[in-house]
Image (cartoon, rainbow, N blue to C red):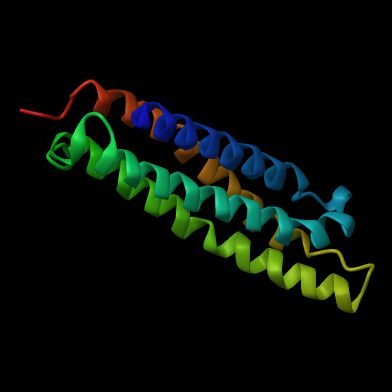
Length: 150
């Protein structure tokens, strides 16, 4: 039963993460500004929190799940998946910092609109995150079936 609860928690957190990444990606457009500039920092907090729940529930599955840590830790696909998750997290730092700056700018000037180049850079990061995120369930499926093990 615990394994099912951990899996459900993990999957729900992943769905929330994907939802808020999609929301951010849609809102990083000039036509949604300045209203979106004020909201993106709040949405990014939900994105971050869902990523932390994904990580925590994934670690709980690692240590308390049905397959056990030995199954995962000996599999290079598991390590590739974790590395990819960390890479996505590192890429997300730039948009997070920009969202916070935009929020402060909107508080100072309610008509604030980020520069077009800034919007493009942030959107590019979000798109890279989105595309890399697609690889995670593929690696998870491989890992769950023992690919990468001797």
